[in-house]
Image 1: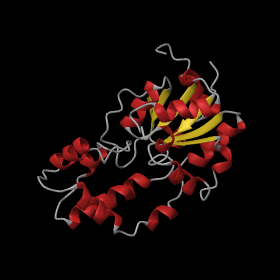
Image 2 (image 1 turned 90 degrees about the horizontal axis):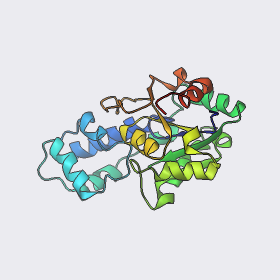
Image 3 (image 1 turned 135 degrees about the horizontal axis):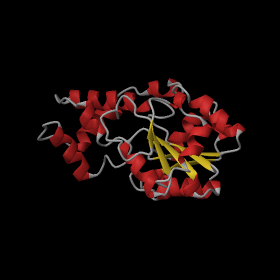
Length: 226
């Protein structure tokens, strides 16, 4: 089976924004005298649903916090200087893999639980914008972020690619769930924040994108389990 498309997650896969976002979140918790463990924060990584009341309450409960409002968190978070996001480099292997896939004629997209404006903000400065035919943020599919499959289905549709002949590259369990729900192969690349995730459902787990080649991704489509 030929490889038609590869769809990349963005945060934590293309740039290590997940770690600096965690640091900002931990600082916001600390402003109010609370400690945020990376393992607790990891449970919401890969989604855009941190404003959901039940999820916020669960996050606080996992940190042993009884009274801490989302509004107080947001105020402390927004008060920080977060300009360091704009200097984050590509993670190892991203440029090499993107360029190798482009040479093979494989269609490329990004599908993220973040907004389209966030993607636009970064792909140009990173010098990879010309390789991606489609950029899909959760705001383009009615706000339905991962683990819902909507961003992946939209990315494949925009590329004109069959999800069954496409591979998703992800750093979170929620992203793997979303990709597989869309009918795609899912390759997990755990990052510093998501190493505690259960990636047993992924079709392949690798240490970094330096370990990934177009031939490896194509071979995953022909596994008997598919």
